[in-house]
Length: 376
Image (cartoon, rainbow, N blue to C red; front, side, top):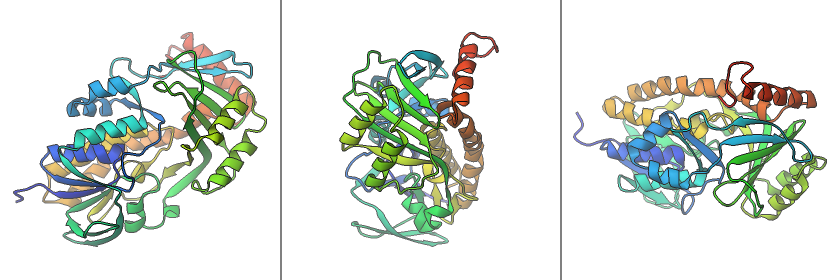
């Protein structure tokens, strides 16, 4: 039997990795986090902390900080070309046990929760992984090689750990025919409790008040396939897709293209028959990304808790712990992945008829005609 906890290397100091580090450290394991950026780097997109993730945040003692960093958003309103409201829906499932926080703020708060319990190595990345039955020998880009009982890839949809241990990204990432682009803009909003969205067929453009610095988002369907890292191609694609879209689109797109701190990526799903290979496993978007529509941040925190609990319950049988983690967490992510189709058609209808049906359905729901509440 072990006298000490497991040695676990976590790639990625985002939401999944930082949560896991904090939980493993508090459970008596030796967690090390490597992050290739020099500090916490994440998009400013607001994300929800709800259900199981809210309970985890309570246990980590970070709820006061999350509430302080949270937005005031309670509603999403859809507007026509002239900016008139045509439909709306609530954005919160639970007013009392849910908070929306900018992704970068959530990551930073979680890293803060883990700093006293885990080792963080910034400006570092994994170059090679050498697996055997007893652990993983890791070659770093800068630091000296080390050996760990387990390596966890919590490094996002474009996971380097997944590429090293399982194979090329193209084998696992399913492009859903949509892209999303976001950036913080110096755009004034009259209210801080609503997100405003305008749709035309296959496109959506939205303004989110954030926490004092409004965020513009462009979500659209296209058969085009471009590399998300190719800034020239992404700029040209956005110009082409949005050239005839009304409302405030021209103003917002010009501001987006003028800023240096932009986010752009495809909307994708990860499909894998197994999340583990020997002493390497995947967590969060690296394993089960549901991109944009699937409560990915809450799911990442819940997955981290499940993995930590499984490892702590049987540290001497890591394969069994990983199998238990995957079985339990797939039951959480599977329905969320199935819900992507519904959510994408709600936010990015394919046709004018789809937009009309969506708006009418939300108006009826808000009046209680179907006996349900909007936003549930």
